[in-house]
Image (cartoon, rainbow, N blue to C red; front, side, top):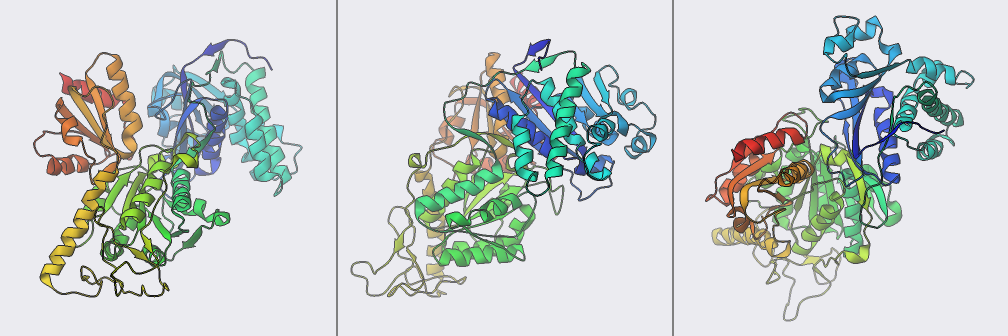
Length: 617
């Protein structure tokens, strides 16, 4: 079908929203994958309700999925949306604050009945006037009724037919942005055809009905076209941060020659890493869904002792439960990786919302002097790289590593250029199979002179029998020692081993000029928003640069030199200033301004630019 009145756009933000059972995550994923397959740059933000099974039709139960796609590399899912799909009044109310002025709203007209309006907290029968958005481009389409009509000849019950209404809405959006239906049709058939062919047929028919409705009724005055992005050549796929983390671990396992083991307890928003690894028995991956968080890390420590590359995955509450066993991993100097996909806290907090509140816990949340390497990924796709690096540092330096992610990058997705494994470095674990020259008995805490890593002797290796445990170790033999001087020596040695990792990671870099009026500092998953804001300010002639951290402990070389080049430094993070305080401890000679947000939401470009301009005055 030919679309008239096509308008070219550089980028567009769409927000799909409805009840948890309305399929908004699938709808958004299918649209974003279609855009990615057409070569658009994409960034997505799934926004799940914080309550499990909140009452249907209420604001608390609204689930959302935002996708930002453009003709360039897209770094954030966008601040505000050009188009919002709302499947009911609660979705409209929960998300109207994210609308751009004059945005298009597509709402299921069948949902605008008195009971639904009341459930959503509206006081009148005109939700648009009540919300002050009556002048927006509002398209009221009876999506539920039209879905039922389109599927009236399909032998499915009414409930199953109504569930297809999200595909009707998807069809409307595909038409609006001149996107083909090929990928969604293929996905639906692959997912449902064997298990239930009628469900597959119904979903495809509903999507085509939505597409045809938008075309035949001229529901949109214009349709829009977003050209493909000019991305570096290569093979791409859409990936989310949890998938990328899992695959990074698999790559580290391959490069090290050590089989991969994951022992974890399911917890939002980290569970998908365990699920993804569980799919890869064909690559020798072993996974155990443990009975609790403590069992998860204890089996991981045991697997590392047995010669595996061992990882455990969790979120903030689980990291607290793992803290004593992390101390055991530090004491025994075994290479494990602990993934913390951060979420809003404290306690259960807001478990589906992103936050950066676990930094201090990652750095110091253990008893005694107990240093650990800490890394933080920045984007969904670079979770692969930092998972790989976490494995490399853990195994080569024989020490546990914490890898920080967060709910925003773990669930969000973007195009990922699939790397060639020949471009990734080999990993050389210090495994020994026989006594060293001149050694009459095995000394498990004999160290490499440069890295201070101890040797990794696997159980059952003849002549290398040894004991390790949670009591302090003799500095060579590994036997229990109560000697006070030995204890101090071992504490300082373990700390120095972590500090020396700075010699094996990249120097800190600055994005932009090495000198200027304002240096924006961030870490972890805030990078896309900070980079977007800084680029916009630089384009306006402002002397602003970005220094973003992925290696947290130890901090990379070169930080002091970078900080010295700027008149002001502002540290931006989704907590109350944890990294800012860490920098004050590490580099006390500088003054640090703060930009903090504690709303369970990422930064917006708008609020960052406002803060930076305020500091430049």
